[in-house]
Image 1 (cartoon, rainbow, N blue to C red):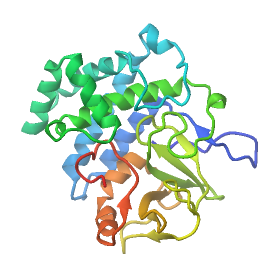
Image 2: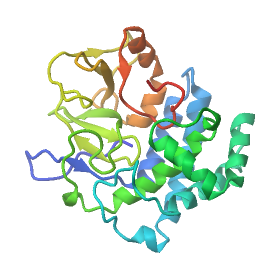
Image 3: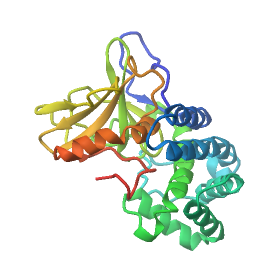
Image 4: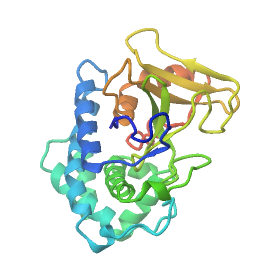
Length: 290
């Protein structure tokens, strides 16, 4: 989701914007559907639109348990070490019940059925693999659905945090420690906000600075020849990595997660030139992540 301009004292750069869960997923679903027509990955984008719509409905059930109503006692949440409660599996159950009413390709439909039969002892290692960025090869068909449930869970957690308690982070999301999926450049001041791949929080990082290694020299920009106004990849010669940036002035309504999937052509161009992808999209694990 593309959040509204950060609020605060005029002239002050707001560091952190916490997500609005239901709005976040509903907006993302619309963006997936807007991007689908004419895209070589149109069917995949439409499917992810359906998944994001289900996420927007699943968020409602997350706030129902006593665990969910309690504020997290640790900030950042550190997704890879956070002791998840059963709420993420409640989110998964809601997603599965919703998605199984739709028509899916055979492999995805089979993955949904396997997840519906899975026990907590089977599901927790799946979640651990996704959060560590290394899902097992045998689990790749199930990964997008488990990732979607984890996004619902961590986005709901992030939304309840007091923003003033979250300290600036040296790298990664200041709320949960996850890498960004991409960044957006907004406003007359061209402020850059990175978007967390997991919890959807946005945080400010000055431009012409690599989020991955924090180098400020050797930064260059990659783009496509045509048809991609508002899209660049900021590449860093110090670490050899790049991160996509979406310029809202030229691409109003861009959603980092959805627009990232729809612009995989730029990833192919970057890979051909020897650059490694540093942004993480949980819907692409095992497919295009470097």
